[in-house]
Every structure is written in C-alpha cells, then in structure tokens.
Image 1 (cartoon, rainbow, N blue to C red):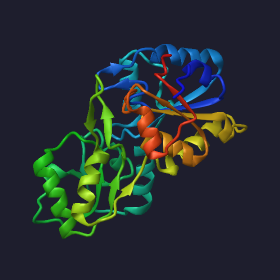
Image 2: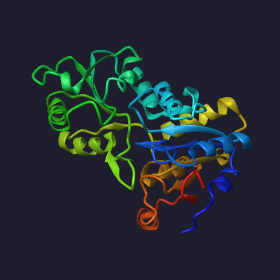
Image 3: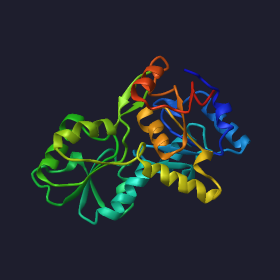
Length: 282
C-alpha cells in the first residue's frame, strides 16, 4: 500500500471536493494540518468545496461551525450538503401535510425552507397519524433512540409514507479510532423492520456529485471531471461515490478507515482509491 503526500496529490487537480468529518474535523474539532492545507490550496490556486453528508445543520450553520473553530475561509458558498439534495426532493415530491423528522430542530431547516410543516418524532401521537405525509431521517441526535425509533417503525406500519434519508453515512469518526453510529446506520436498522425501501441522499449517490460538479462549473465552465479530486475517509461513501461518478479519489486515514485496516478493506471491498494519504495535513 503506497502512502503519498497529500500536497503532491493535490497539485495535480484544479478542484478538490473535501469530506468534512474524518478529513477536516472530527467530533472534537479541526484535525491537525487542516487549516494549513486550506491555505496551501489557496496559494496554489486550487478551488475546494466541502462535500458532506451532514444534514444536521444548514450550510450556513455548518460554515459558522468552521468559523468558530478558526477556519473562516469555509463560507456557506463552500459547503455542499446532502441535506440540500434532500431539500430539492421534498420541494418537488411532498406537496403538503406534516413531515415527521428524526433529528434536532436545527436539522429540520431542510424541510421547513420548502414551506412544509414539521413535527419531531418525539412529539407525534402514534394513534393519530393521518396527517403525516413523509418521514425524514436527518440526524442521530434530538430524539430518544429506544422510544422514538419504536415510534418510527410503528408509524411506517400504520401509514404508507415515503422515507427520506438525508445522510447516508452509517458512522462518523470521534477520536482515537472510535466511531459513532450516524443516521444512515439507524436507517439501515429501520428499513428492514418497516418493510419499506428508503430514499437515500448524499454520498455515494451520484446526485450530490453531479450537483457539486455543476456548482464548480458555474465558477469555471472549463472544469471537467479529470480536473476534480474527491477526498474522503470512507470507502463506501466518499471513495466509491467518486469512483462511480468518474472522478479521481483520495482516501485519507484520519477518520473511519484505520491505517492498520486500510489495505485489508480495500482488497476485500474492491473499492480502490487513486491515492492514499495519512491525512490532508501531510
């Protein structure tokens, strides 16, 4: 397994899509070298965007979180989230009624901005579900896992609703090699129990990559897929998503994939990145 310098890899591209968790930050803050790497990209004239499956907050709130942690360069216009794609679906496909969500009040932003009424899974009356028109899974916080996941299963047994998963990540990195279960992992639990097929947005789905690609071309119409690199810490979302979309990929070993497991996981899954780096800070 060949470990390369991220700076040397980055110099080969005009645009870089950066995952957030495991690449730029973890649960406790900004990862070592991330600030310096963004300054390097600026100096080299390389455009970057944060391409994240985080649907817990709006792009403005996600950018504000980076600013609070000392990276004001990541503005709202630099953030492309899976919640934005789910937002488009809701606007086009859910015409009224009340949308039930799993997540925090902040995450409900993606539903409310298209004019839909919302209610947290915690506040629904499971014996009166007639007015609910969709269930949206946004974040792993903001509800009681045992009580409210049971409510969600019974809601779907009683009512035929579309289920939208705005974040397909199954886990996200904490520190010291540990991970936490993300809302995509909870969706994996609920889907077979409810006997439904869920609608998932975010990496590895091509929609978010196409959205980001068109977004990048607005600033530079000459950009092609050959000019873009996707940088992520997860084989099953970031890397396979970039591979399927036809752009080069770089796996960093600072998040979900531990260095000691990387070669085994690549060989067993057949998901092969173009490059492997210890982190974006190298």
